[in-house]
Amino acid sequence: MTRRHTLFGVRLDALTMDETVQRCLEAVRRGEQIEIGMVNAAKLVNMRRDPRLAEAVAGCDLVLADGQAVVWAGRVLGVRLPERVAGIDLFMRLLAAAEVADIPVYLLGARQEVLEMMLRQISERFPELRVAGSRNGYFADGDQEAIADAVADSRAQLLFLGMTSPKKEIFTAGYGKRTGAHVVHGVGGSFDILAGITKRAPLLWQRMGLEWFYRTLQEPRRLGKRYLTTNAAFLAMTVRELIHRTPSAGSANRSH
Image (cartoon, rainbow, N blue to C red):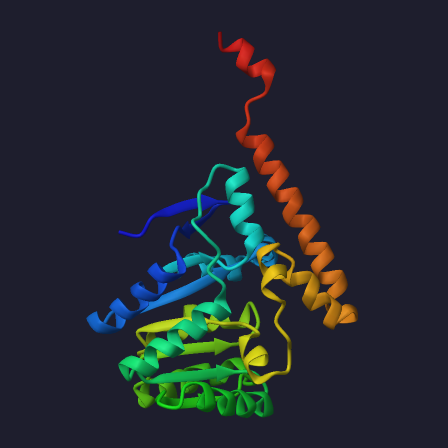
């Protein structure tokens, strides 16, 4: 059974990366369908502002800590999450496993030119991987049903969504099951990183929880204010939760 904890009112699965990969491969073997939700500090903040996003994430079969700040906040608040399960790392692990096990995959997201660049990179890194289909991520809401049917027709067993939030979560909630994929994993900006458009933070920065800052240095005008605002809001959420969970000295004295 998956170990689940509640943090900021969100149920999170306390899984390691290895356990998550194993759970996904088991779903393929058993013919099950699982939808994966990933949360970082920014998304937890946005879930409080966007009920549709919150509902979509809550409906996922697995909800994982994509951000190091979430793992740290959990420790402060007494919620033990074994490690960060980064969306892009899970993406790469599943591509490697799919190549070995001959599991067909579908790649949905990014601009067309970025998608094509990523597909070339994938063909070099995973030459035996069976890509059942692909499509860029620019489509109207009214096209979602037809796109889900195209994924189903491809018979892909792993579906990766390289789209931003909340679009990928809403697509997963509305049409994940219809795609027929055994695993639906929203990988956000991973397509851009794999294509070489965006550079990922060095490992040390990742371990320090500073990937957001590294991204900000690359696109300060677009991301600076957004990250500072959401990080401040996340810190405030954590402090409020800590105060709420910690009994005051006065209340402790009155209990005697």
